[in-house]
Length: 95
Image 1 (spheres, helix red, strand yellow):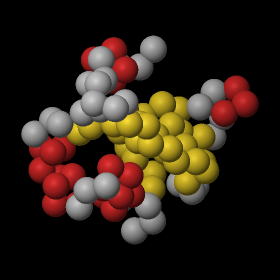
Image 2 (tube, rainbow, N blue to C red):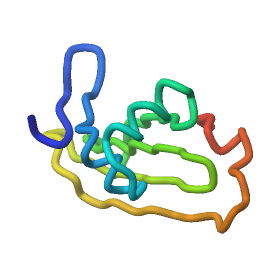
Image 3 (cartoon, one colour):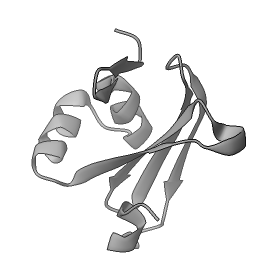
């Protein structure tokens, strides 16, 4: 599987991409997702960002953001560590 694949009705992201971004192994990633400790959101680009998607993953005080094009190629990836401060719930919601 490619790192990002568009499926009917959703986007499939390879666990390796997210685990690597958070510096954990895939088993830990899956466990934390099941526990609700890692969450995500997807935003579709408009205007000059048409055809791109912003995938954001949250884990405690860290945020992983991946920008992909319509073919699923990673355009940009960034990780921010908020130095021990838990992200406020509003950062997990669109708008």
